Length: 208
Image (tube, rainbow, N blue to C red; front, side, top):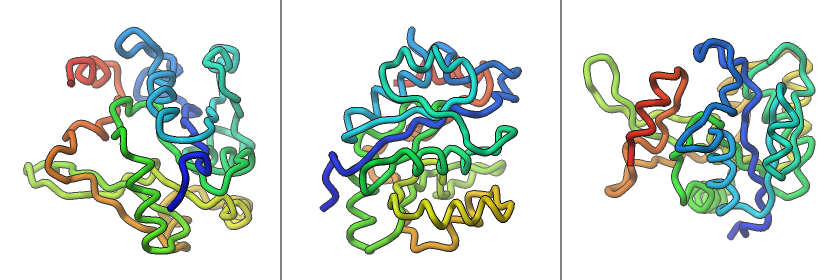
């Protein structure tokens, strides 16, 4: 059993927001509060400690009342840079990452990932969610930014990024990873819907 207090939650808000016109995505309003704060509040109910990874408007993120850390890697190096930042500042045995643009992620995310990691004696556990392709076919696909990581993976990730690695899949493939499908009856279909554009954000506003 992995206790809630043994998990630090990390909200990933360090991207460029390119598809949203270059705005700071985590500070865009969702149901009256910033997206990243919405994610943070949802995460705080599931973990013992929280952090935010952001690269702009640090004062605005610090106002959320949790520690904020920018990437250690230069030039907006992507989610893996956020993983690295989180692991560097994680003081618990486990780190749970969530992106700032998916505000309806499951309320039992930490519980289910932790149970799978423990059961499979894995180094990490990753959520998988149903997605439809162009033909309407539903496939359950890994969601690598929803990941529970052993804090001791820091050394491996430092080595990987120092060698120029930037792709999450290439790094996670080096470790024992438990895949956790969120496709049970009752799992909300829009739980992993992320808002890459302002139009998608408006669509999310209307979801239950």
